[in-house]
Picture 1 (cartoon, rainbow, N blue to C red):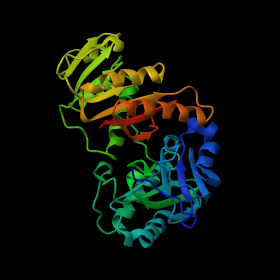
Picture 2 (picture 1 turned 30 degrees about the vertical axis):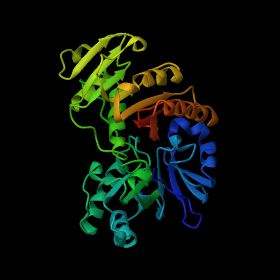
Picture 3 (picture 1 turned 180 degrees about the vertical axis):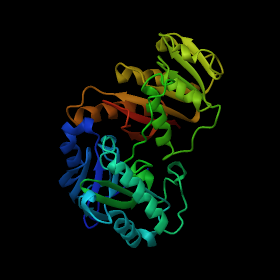
Amino acid sequence: MSAPIFPQSFGPWLVRVPEIFEGVAVDILGQMGAESHTRLGQDYYLIKKGIAASIQESEVAKFARWNLPIEHSWPCNPQRMDGFIEKSAQTLLKKFGDRKPQAIFIGQLNATSPDKYYKSLASNLRGRALQVFPKLRVATVEEQDPLDETLFCLVGKEGLFAGMQTPRASNGLYAGGSKYIDQDSPDTISRAGAKIAEALHYLLLHRPALAKGSHWVELGACPGGMTSELLARDQRVTAIDRAPLDRRLDGRPGLKFIHADVATFAPDKGITFDAILSDLNGPPEESIAHVMRLTPNLRSKGLVVFTLKVPKIESVDGPCALFRKIVKVASGAGLRLFAQTHLTYNRHEFTLFFERQ
């Protein structure tokens, strides 16, 4: 797995630690090797000094949603700067143009702020940057090569912060790493739909999207938010739960609902799955045991998307120990962990991605 390195001579690094982990953020940064840091925006931390071997391969990788080496910064209040957009665009061209980034993506330090100024500023700055840079190879987020460098930039009331890194090393395809999903549609069944949508987007950092018609088994599917999202992507779903699915899913093509306890579910002989999805509540040890029981029905290189539910996070050590335990158990069933993250729509939980060896 590609991962960034913190050489001391390189300069500062921006790390995003979700606000839900604010109480343990200092410990997280300390385990990354940070000797001094400054908080920026809602949940960003600028590491000023420190050496760490790697973020993505570190014990605390799952707590850091996104990271970026800061190769250019302009501490200022953009609202009070004349010509901020033009000056910034020209400076980005001067500093990064020769390195030929595959794309330029610009976001906000405080992405959930109701103040639309910085959202508009980020959009306008990207528009101007695209005009001054030579033609880029990639126009949209999901077209990026995860192993080719992108110029990422974040703006906020603290100023502008930019650097180049591959999307995989940054742990996200967007500047900031989050894909925000509209949940106000009358067709939205539950928040879980946004969670799997973001997980599938995140997966593009590591492997191609599953082909249309791929067969998923979803454990504990009620009320059907994730099921609905998979069906909308032309996937086939065998959904299992003791409780019924939302009636809006009745008759949906590609859906087979089994009204049963996950613990008693046994696939018919010869049935195979391309992916297993588990967002079960309850002890993670029980949840991974259900996944392992179905692993023989998972095709080679088949995917497992597993939500690791943890108790309220009051320290780093507890979740890390539980994580190690679950990964070790899964490995014993032939499942290789290849990615881990905390999604925008996760709470006290992490999303783990396994592949059947």
